[in-house]
Length: 101
Image (cartoon, rainbow, N blue to C red; front, side, top):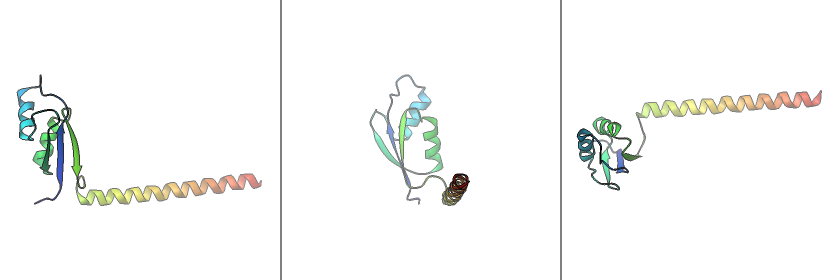
C-alpha cells in the first residue's frame, strides 16, 4: 500500500453545481466549505480530484508522479544549472576581454 497521501479541502460551495459533481465531492469525503479529508494517492482519487478542481484545494504529501520522472526532472534541473553557469562564465570572460582592449 502506498504511503503517499493527498489532503483535499473544500473551498467553494456545491450550490448550483450538477448532481454528479456533488456526488464526486461526497466520494472525496467532503460536504461543506472548510471540510478536509486525507486520501490515499491513487489514480481513482486523482481522477475524482480532476473533476472538481474549481471547488477544492489540494495539498499533496509526498512526491508527485513517478519516482523515475522525479529523478529525471532533477537531472534536467542540474544540467540546466550547469549550462546557465557555463554561459554566465563565458559572458564574464567576453566582458573582461572587451575591457582589456
